Image 1 (cartoon, one colour):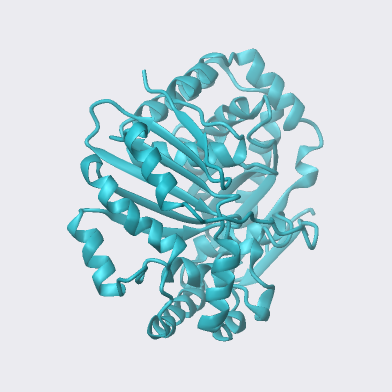
Image 2 (cartoon, rainbow, N blue to C red):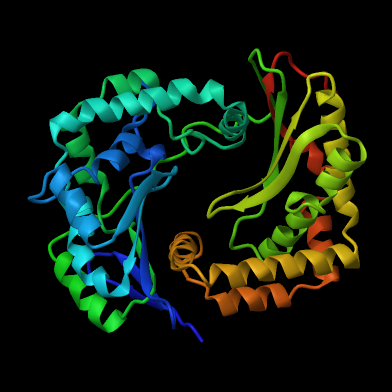
Length: 416
C-alpha cells in the first residue's frame, strides 16, 4: 500500500513523498506562491507571473539557457511551467535514478534563475501573441470570461495578462518580483513514483539551506460581478458558459457533489449530453464539472450551439440544472461511482498525476490524500447521501445565483 510522507522544513517549505512500487520514473510538482493574483493590476504589470514562469527555465545558476536545457535533457528530465491565481507551477519527470542529479538544476530555476535580458523580448512576444489570439479560440475565451464574472478580483484573472502591463515590464522588475515572491513559506513541493525520502530529504535540506521568507496572499479587491456577460464575435457558433456556486474542497459534501457533477455532465451518458445533445440535437458539445478550491467552489457548464438554437440550449441546460435538486437515480449513482473509482485507479499509474494531486491537496486541505483515502471516500457515498447533498447545495433557489457568459454573433434572449 502506498503511503505519503509529509515534511515541513525549517524555512516553511512543505514537502511530500509518495513512493510507488514498480514505477521507474519520479515526478515532481512544485507550487511557488507567485501566481497571477499577486501581479500589479492591469497596465501596472498584470501578466508578470506568466512571464516569470517562462523565464525561470531559460537559464539558472551558472548555466545559460542552452546549457541549462542541455543539462536537463541529458538527464532525460521533462519539465514545464504553468500559472494559476495562487502559484507558478513547475512540474518535472525523470527516471528515479536520475532525480538526485536533476534536483540541483530544478532548484536553481527557483532559487537562482538568471533572467537574462536577451530572453525577455521573445517571451513577451509569445505572451502578447497568446493574448491577441484568444479570439481565435472562442470556446476557451468564453470560459475565461465566465471566470472573470464569477470569481472575485484579483482571483478571476485569465493568466494571459494585460497588453499594456506586459509591454511595460522590465527585466529588473521581474528579478525583484521573483526574489520577493518565490519564497519557501507558501511553497509546496510534492514527489511521487520512484522516490526515496531517506535519500531525497537530506539533499533538499542542503539545496534549500539559506533560502528564507514567507509569502503574503493578495487580498480580494472587488467582489464577484456575476450576472450575464456577452462578447460579440463574428463566429458561426454561439458558445455558452454557466457557473454556479459549489462548496470548497474541505466541505464534507465535496465528494458527493463531485459524483453528482459526473451524472450531470461528466460523461457521455450524462444528463446534459443525453437531454441537450442526443435527444434534442441542440448543440454539438456540452458538458459540466465542479472545481472545488480552497476558498471557493464552482460548477461549470459549457455548450457550443448554433446562434439559432443557443437560447433553447440554455433553457434546456437550466432545466437539467433545476432537475438536480430532486436527486439522481440508483443507476446513475452506480455508474458515476464506478467511473470515479476508475479514474482513481488510472491516476495511480501516473507519478505526475499523483504528485500534482498531493500538491493540490496540501494547498487546499493541508493534507495529502492517498489513492486508498480517495477510494474509501467514494465507497462511503450512498445514494441517500448524494441526494441529501444535492438538496442542500443545489436545491430550490440555486439557479438564482447563475452566472452566464456567451461568445457569438449576438446576445441570447434570456429571462434574466
